[in-house]
Image (cartoon, rainbow, N blue to C red):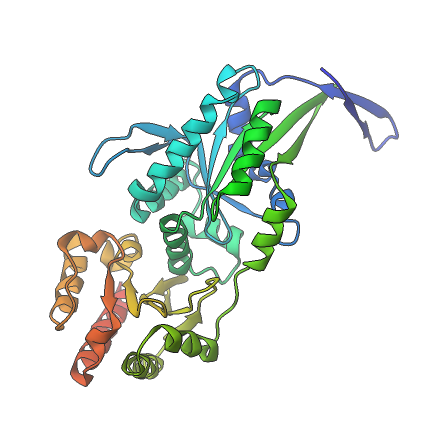
Length: 377
């Protein structure tokens, strides 16, 4: 053991605290689950310190569709921007920390972006909340504020995962030199993913303990790139500018009509997105203290992302029959074809399918029905 820190008590006495080993790997895992700030969010991004939401401990991960879990990720977290963060915890005495753990975490990430559907992540989070007697929405409020839009947040998680915008973090009491070099190299080369190691040393003295996290792998080049890609707040004006870049005039006209029709519905609010390069907006309604996003309009690709995956966990649309009815209503519009398993996911609708006035009117009618069902629940 080496080094030490000194604790000054209220009575002016000085306690020398020396480095101490963890009794077991599980102790470090438990501390990380209980105190997510040990992930050094202020060191990862000093300008916008990362805050953390634990999805679950030991979350299962399959290696192919419709298969059982092959692995278990120690701690999947998400930050306030919905960036999935996969954490693998090892003690320095574990020889796998040198090289094997690198391949292990990379394999987890490669499969998570393909085989972790959003509904599985939400279910794992809600299960973790149940085990800890915490209301899921309050967990989101603690992460992103009193005006938390759960639907928009989980959509951001889904979007980040699909884009490979993830963060891989190795946590140990001591990060060996070999792992430091690998982490620094990977973090320079990988984009948009980030790779870090965090050394969490434990110091003990008398009845007191101190935990000191230190980030490894952050480079100035990567910090500058991240700062350049900070999320922007889209507005109605900038949304339509972005929409016009990626779509024809008739799609732009359709979206203007859609937005006007949505604003005419009592209680509907429009939330403008914060994507780095792609503008979006989400119409939503509030009921019983919860925010219900109806869908998301994306400028790039000219599409509407449906919210079956979120609705399935909320209100009357927890019923599979209700989601199937919503799917049937969508599919009655020419040009829309949502598959049967889409009622648990976020299938897209092409905006061009709403170009005809009668199609747009039917689409609005469907969401008036959705809102009535929500308010009646």
